[in-house]
Amino acid sequence: MRRVLLIRVSAIGDVVLLEPMVRALKERFSGVEVDLITAPFLVKLMAERAGFDQVYGFERHQKEGISTCLAQLDSSEYDLAIDLQAKVQTRRLLKGVKATQKKVLQKRSFSQGLLSLVGYDPPLTQLHNTQIYLKTIEEHGIDSSPRRPVFLGADTAKKKRIAVAPCAQHQTKQWPIGYFQDLLVQLKNELPDYEIVAAAGPKDGVQVEALRSVRPELIDTMELSLDSLARALEEVEIFVGVDTGPTHMAAALGAKVIALFGPTSPTRWGPIGETHQILSLNLSCAPCSNTGGPQCPKADQAQACMKQLSVAQVMDAIKKVVA
Image (tube, one colour):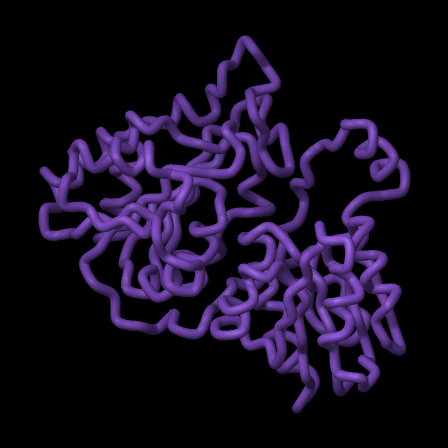
């Protein structure tokens, strides 16, 4: 095996979790080149941190996105190209790639795939997502056991900083902002030596200002690019977040992560390693989704999987990793 191409465009966490696959290929095949096609905003992060040789951007929503992306590729043929997104546009992209062997990730059976097209998509809960990826190359003598993602910079000396990620793309994955406010107040009282970082993006101003109202001195990352966010996170000792991209980044960069799970599966998406704490109430209705959604599917539960996770539970988990 000389050249391998992986295709995964979104989301941030899913792409971060590719790192063990790159590492496994390079351990198995000396000198192999492993390239990636991903979303343009992820190119620099994955090129600098995840061990890829070349990373190419793919604007999948642009009319000429496929042809523009393919034009970037080296004219040499790949030995193996894998579509790890398995969507219409990435399948079309894979079709245009020169490769001896081509594969598309199969996460579901044929019948499950048909059901997902009509909105019935039960959460995948059996394997960690790193295993799902690694199983696509298992036939090449690579172990598909779950592996912890490790980014370049994970061994950077940590500062006394606790980062919190109050936001997620999907509403049902969010922990109430009032709980985060109460947590920051408790941290000031019980761990006053720690600086607070709000790991947030440019659309998260309301939540950041809510946190700043109780901790005016906090550092926020709203104006940082994704690769600059990585530089900030590599100095963070403890990270508290929901199932979202920055949480996966922080774990890959060596932080001790307190991960708060509700509608999505901690088995599939939780950080790997003894330094992390995964908090989940394991309600009978959870997990209910592979990605989260705009509202709780059970009106009588009212997002209980997140709202019943108490500040005291999170504070206890922080104290454990500090100790």
